[in-house]
Image 1 (cartoon, helix red, strand yellow):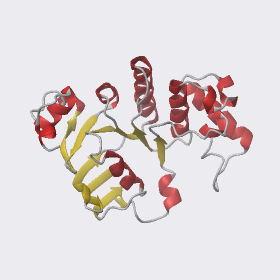
Image 2 (spheres, rainbow, N blue to C red):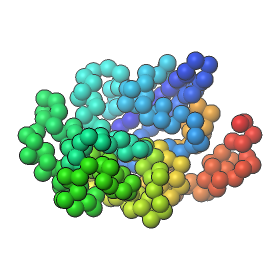
Image 3 (cartoon, rainbow, N blue to C red):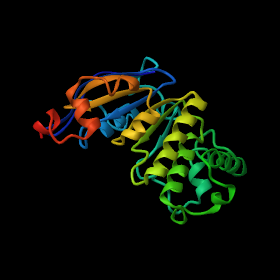
Image 4 (cartoon, rainbow, N blue to C red):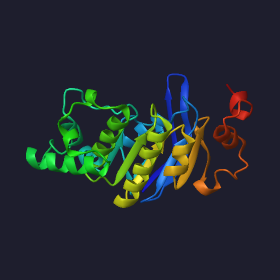
Length: 248
C-alpha cells in the first residue's frame, strides 16, 4: 500500500534520510525501530506530506503522496500521537470526534457524540468518561482517548508514534494489545515508530530498522531475533558496544 523509493531529506547540513527504500503491504503492521534522532518521525511526516522529501518518491496505492486532493488523502489516515496531543479545552468526546465534526462530511453533533462514545467503549473507557476534560484523566486513559480518536473515522491507515511512551509496563501491555486487536479487527494498514521492544513484538508483522539514513534491515518480526545484522542485534539487546556506538 505504501512504498518509499530512494527518499532523501536533509535539514541544512544534517542529512537525515539518505536513500530510504521501504514497502508496507496492505493490511499489515510495520514497526520502524532505530535510535533517537535517526529520522523515524521525519520519515512518518514525509509519508503524510507534512515534510517534502528532497528527492525520491513516496506512493500510496501507486499514487504520489505529494499530488492530488490533500483532504481526500489525509482522510485515509488516523494518527496516535506520542504525547496524546489532546485538546485541553475540549471534552473527551469532542477530542475523539474532532474530525467527524469538521469538513464537508461533518456529522450532526449528537451523532458524532454517539460515534465517540462507541469508540471510547472499544478502547475500554466507560461512557461517563466522554464528558470529562483530558486533565481529569490518567496518562493511560489519555492514551486510550488518543487511540479512540485515531480510529473514529474508520481510517485505512493508522500511524502510531511511540504509543507507549510514559506508560508503566502494565498499561503499555494494555495499549499494545488494544492496538493489535483494533488493527486486525479493522483490517487497517499500520505503521508504528517506537523504541519499546515489547511493543515491537506485540504489534509488528514486519520490522524495519532505520540507521544512518537508510533502512539497515527489514523483515518479519519472527526473524528479528535470529538476524545476524549487528545493528539490529545491538539495538534490540541494548548493548553499549557495537556499530551504532562506534559512529556516535
